[in-house]
Image 1 (cartoon, rainbow, N blue to C red):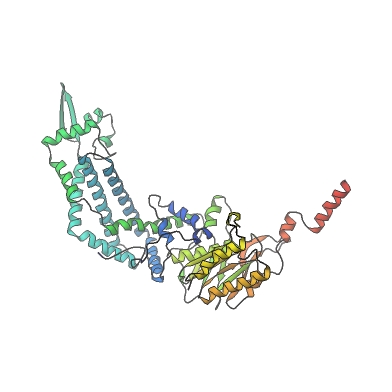
Image 2 (image 1 turned 180 degrees about the horizontal axis):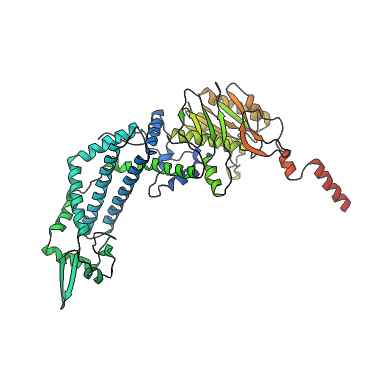
Length: 505
C-alpha cells in the first residue's frame, strides 16, 4: 500500500530526530516531559523533535488535532491504543514462554486483540464526523486493510480459537492412586490441586501469567494424546499466521500518541485554569496573540501556587523584530520564551498557550540565549557568544523566527550596539521575524521594521516589577532604584549607617 502517516501528508525526506537546541533555550524540554507522562507506555518525544519543514504539514496536523478533540474520536483512538497494548502484552508473553503450545496460544491472543483493535477503529472512524484529510485517509486505509481476505480470515479464526481457549478447562480427579483428566467447566478439583482456591484466573494456562508448571505440562501432554483437536488448531494458526501486523497500523499506534498525549496534557492544564486556543492562520507576516504565557513556567508555578502573568502583543505593518528592554528579572526573557513556545506549538499543528493567536508559518526556530562564561574553554563570554552565533547566521534561515536573549552583554556599549544592529539587519534581510532581548536601548530605534517593547514597573515608589511587556520605549535610566531601596543602599541610608558607625567608635 502507499505511504500513510498521521504526522506527515507525504513521506519525509529525512528521518533525523536529533534534539534541536531551541528545546532547552525555550524550556520546551520541561513541557514535553510533562506531555510524555500522559502516554507513559510510548516513546513519543522524538516525534516532537522534528520541526515541520512545510506549511502543508502544519495544516495537516492541525486539522487532525481538531478531529482528535472531538470526544467520540478521542475515545475511539483511546480504545484502539488500549487494545493494541493488550496485543503487545500478549506478544511479550509469547516470547517469554518455552513450550510451543503455550507460545502458540499467546500468539492467537495477540492476533485476536490486534484484529479487534483495527476493526474497532475502522468501524468507529467510518461512523464519526472526521473533517481532516488525514483521518479520512486513515479511515480509507483501514477499510482496505480490514476488507482484505487474509485479514478477515485471520480475524475470524483468531476469534474462534480465542473463544475456545477462554472456555477451556481441565478437571483432575484423583481416586485410588489414579488421575482422571477430563475437559469441562467444573470448578474445584484442578484449582484446589494447584492451590488457587476460589480464584478462577488460574484455571487455564492460556490466561493469566505466561508459563506452565511441570504439573501443567504433564497434564496437557497426557490430555492431548486423546484430544488433539484444539491444540492442533492453536499451533496450526501460529504456523499459518506468523505475522499479522500491518507496518502502517503499527506505526499509527505510536504516531497517534503525538496527539493523544498533548490533548490529555492540554485538558489537565485547562482544569488548572490555563488557556489554550487553536491559532488562526495569518496572512503574510501578520502576527499577534492575546493572553500569551510561558507554558513551562505555568507547569512549574501551579504546583507552588504562584500566579503566571500573561501578555498581549501584535506586530504592526512592516514590523519584523521586537527589541525588548527593561529591568533585570522584569519578565523580558519569560516573554521571549513564551513567544518561542507559541511559534513552536503552532508549527507543530497543536493548540497554543494563549487566549487567542494569529501566527504565520515559519520555516524554523533559531534561538541564542546568553550562557555563562566557560573557564575551561579558554574563551571569554563575548567570544563564546560569537562562536555560537556564527552557525546560526550561516544557516539557511529564510522565513525563520529568531529569538536572541541578552547578546553582547560584555561588549563595550558602542560595540554592542553596532554588532546588535548588524545581527538584526542580517535576519530581517532574510525575511525573518523575531524578538531581541537586550539592555541596549538604542537597538529599539535602530532600523525600520524594529519595534521597542519594555518590561514595565508599577507606579509605586518601590517601582515593583509587573512582568507585563508593553509597547513603549525603554527609559534612558538604569533600573537599579528598586534594588537600591530593597537592600538599603540609598545615599541617605548609607550616610546614616556610616555616621552611626563613626559615632559608635
